[in-house]
Length: 252
Ligand SMILES: Nc1ncnc2c1ncn2[C@@H]1O[C@H](COP(=O)(O)OP(=O)(O)OP(=O)(O)O)[C@@H](O)[C@H]1O
Image (cartoon, rainbow, N blue to C red; front, side):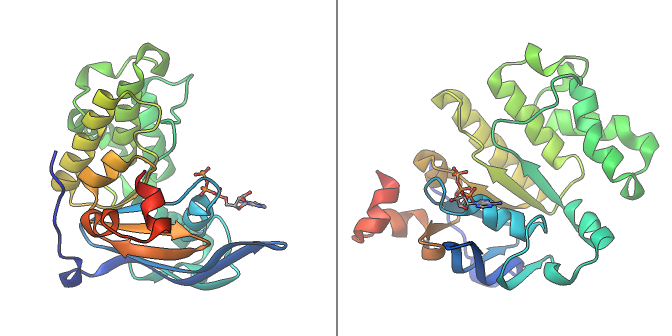
């Protein structure tokens, strides 16, 4: 697979984070972290375990309050949004959680309907079946509506989770470790699917991953989160050629 090229300078940011700081007691987790996710790009965020990636995402979607800094999502200052406004905004963001996180006791159809029910105000309820079918078609699993998650392989579960993430046709998708736990061939299929989805739905994606191959294939740009800050930003080609030992460590 080839590395993708992209010129983000012509695009506007859909997410803008500026000087985000968050500490827990004495522990400084985010220390003036800044980033921009541009419209239509695939931005990969890499950082070792415990470096603050989840804390950053939680701040970004209003689940955690930062100590200081600015967060703008789709033009909204999220630190000023009221509860119902934040809820509306979350409908514009699809999540693919670590390990798929499907509801075991629900069928595929019910799993997919879940985000629709949460945001019924935005949706024509009569249209639910069509939306479920379209989402399943986008991930190539039209025949699985009545199945339970346990009847699906790990790769299929990840595809269903992806269908659930895109069913509301979000402007932004946040992927948390999308290839973790999959064999290399299935991981590659998921990466290709993510790229197809971005083409089809014109989403902007923030992808958290430790998978260097995934980053190489999918990223237009990358951010390396280290010591609470955006230590290095650039394309895969730029960063993987860096002589900085701290940057090199990410690519081993
Ligand atoms: N609510 C909390 N209270 C106290 N400490 C917290 C809280 N949430 C996170 N932390 C701490 O903040 C640090 C960063 O955690 P975070 O979950 O963001 O890491 P991460 O980069 O997402 O790691 P991983 O790749 O393992 O998921 C950790 O040391 C964690 O213990």
